[in-house]
Image 1 (cartoon, rainbow, N blue to C red):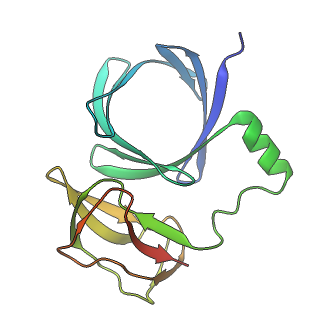
Image 2: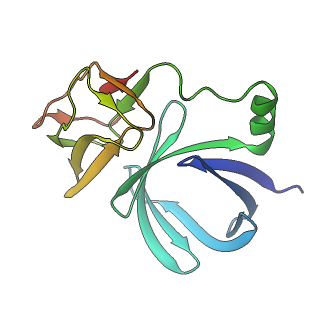
Length: 168
């Protein structure tokens, strides 16, 4: 049986992930012993990697996965190896074009909105500070652009997957 292989892209860096069996994966040629299980009804997961325990919030979005781990929110694009090769042959994916909709990765309270509509932002700039489960999370811009359609303000309660603002 052939192992399943994926490419996970995080901050413009590709990681080759190969699923060996239920308890082992290969990440860029390094074997990791893992255990990954959902906790309850929320998108909370218990993750054991080489004996270290982590709790992660994992939310699927339209084109990527939002992962809240150790107080940091990551946007991870995952595709299987074959799909990535096909897209590369067709000219790649166009994540830098079009409108990006920042969605709440979890229900929470908007603590601050340090940007205004029409403001130019750079990749990595904080767009929204969201509090959820007693943790403040900085939601950052995945690219350069201009803030458009600001839909929330400080003090607003939001639901998971609710659109907060757009960057064009």
